[in-house]
Image 1 (cartoon, rainbow, N blue to C red):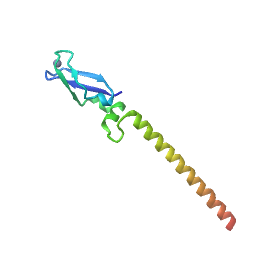
Image 2: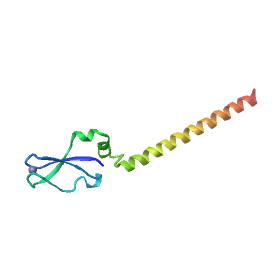
Image 3: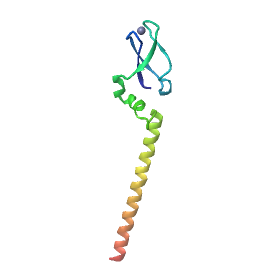
Image 4: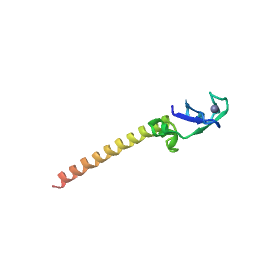
Length: 96
Ligand SMILES: [Zn+2]
């Protein structure tokens, strides 16, 4: 779960671990009780923050799914290449 940082009008800050979809749910300042707004924090540089910063990835689940799909496609492509290479060898042998 990504870590988000919030700030109240008085400048108090708080960090909350939240689901991506809950990131803009209201947060109340623990110091003065004022409503807080989400700010960008340095934590977004860390792996978890990646998901909230890349719209095409979206969530960790999505990222894993896309990554698995990509791996499968790479493997299928490699298999096809091998197949073609085998056939080319065979044809050359037959021709020679
Ligand atoms: Zn405050």
